[in-house]
Image: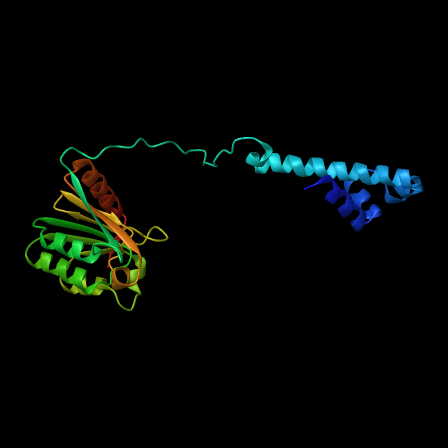
Length: 238
């Protein structure tokens, strides 16, 4: 904001109103001293300087880069850097990107069909018929399948919650948080799928989504399994 612009703004707003806002003198007293052009200019200069200083101070406090100071990102008081961990030796991952890459739905169906012992699932929205059918088939061949869903699945018109329950798959609702927004599967305590991909037809056919299947990293599998167990203990039966 330039000094010339501020001065013109002060003149436009009117001397009496500007003085009452930015000085401790009454408008009548200042107008009495502003009979000459020089006194009038002095008053407007004083007000303009006051506004300019206030504005520059606000810029320095709230926009430090504009005042020549390095910007500091805002962080909550308890924010602490989390050290990155490398993947375990011998582990690997498979990526999917829809609609521009490999199918996330196919990746999940194939992983479910290869599961032999245990399948843990966390889902926000679960309406994909191919994925639901693969889960039901895993249950029928003796896999220990357990599913945690968001509470929205209780009222959705089309959801796999009822289908899986009728197929004998234990289903619980994670109703404590506002949204149980996880999209996770843990396969045989050996692999984890996670990403933005909801287990829905829309995610596969209409959205831009991503997913990652990580195999062979015991620490990653354990972390996701521990979190699944924590959410399971706080959930209720569907």
